[in-house]
Amino acid sequence: MKKVMDNVYEMEHPLIQHKITMLRDKNTGTNEFRKMVEEIAMLMGFEALSDLPLTEVEIETPIEKCMSPVIAGRKLAIVPILRAGLGMVSGILALTPTAKVGHIGMYRDEVTHEPHEYYCKLPSPIEERTIVVTDPMLATGGSAVDAVTQIKRHGGKRIKFLAIIGAPEGIKKLHDAHPDVELYVGHIDRCLNENAYICPGLGDAGDRIFGTK
Image (cartoon, rainbow, N blue to C red; front, top):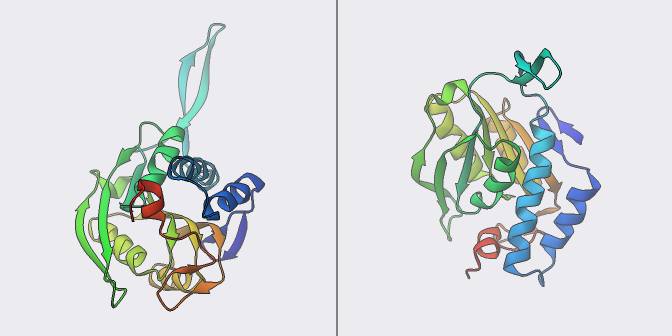
């Protein structure tokens, strides 16, 4: 994992990079694409959650009693940005099956490319949880900034953002707006095109996860 700037990290794990290449391929079908997104999310989550706080509890093994570490505090909150972010949830839940799941609904205006929120439901008490926001694509950064802003308005404090592909423009926008948020990106691509799509990217992640056009 490479630190790009304060609180911004790019994944370098060979398995993540290999699976991202499979995602990019236009010939990868919906079922395989969906599975790859889940697997990448799990691998990224493994890295991003390496700093979760621990506390010790007493347990009894088949041999004897001992003190052993468990994750401290409230359960993790996973908050996908609808709809594409849903594709990453099961991968992280495989690591932390007791995590709570919230949802933030955003859509992008096809003309202005500006994000608009239509839904927000977060686990309570959100202020006591480590929050993992998921969205496969961090393009302009507008939806990401607005989603994090909404979470903070509801009391969220410790926020991690996971994106499989990120454009430099979106990474800068999110970092400038919320420098306290830890951003983990599977791969940083070249740029956005005139339609605000990431290049080389992988197309519309939501359409490819759910098989829609």
